[in-house]
Image 1 (cartoon, rainbow, N blue to C red):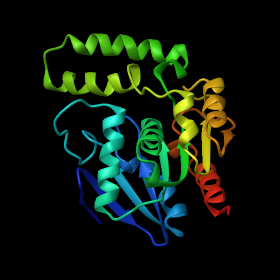
Image 2: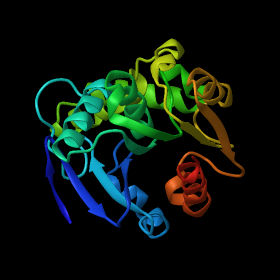
Image 3: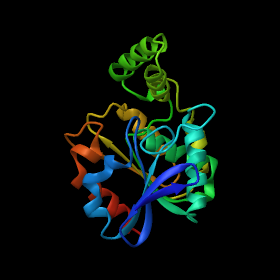
Length: 229
């Protein structure tokens, strides 16, 4: 069941305490499809498509992680959700962190998977090709190239958070990363240490695309964390 919630497209399934799903760059809420059977049994899943992704419109103004976090705040307000549990993957994890910093009453419990605070948090072997692709896309005069340029900028120029910003996020948090993630291991440890009530979980043998490649282990981590009191 789907409909617009403020500025964003939202689809909901399952019953129980709401769990909001925030996807990564170039994706939609469907990136979590392999986790839905496990999570929907005990949660009302609210999948949001970010601005310029999935079925959500591009809208006006800049496309930034901070702006996307404000969009999520508006969407959750439209749905009447406050103090809600969030599961954010990749750029969705970055959006979730921005949301928790910018709109502190909106988040109850937080799971971020493969998130980073700033571009240098990514491994150089991943960031360098992104920057080359971004530079190449910028010179192509085509609407699709402009859209690609914007999405690549979300990874090469965004987000803009510092560890000190996370000190205000006083909610239970779980930071998840794959052993071979594009996010540097020390950066994931930095995020977990900066969040006052967080711990870090590393999935062995996994890369970045955990919701797709390791949906079962990730769902179990999420369920175990959300079941804690």
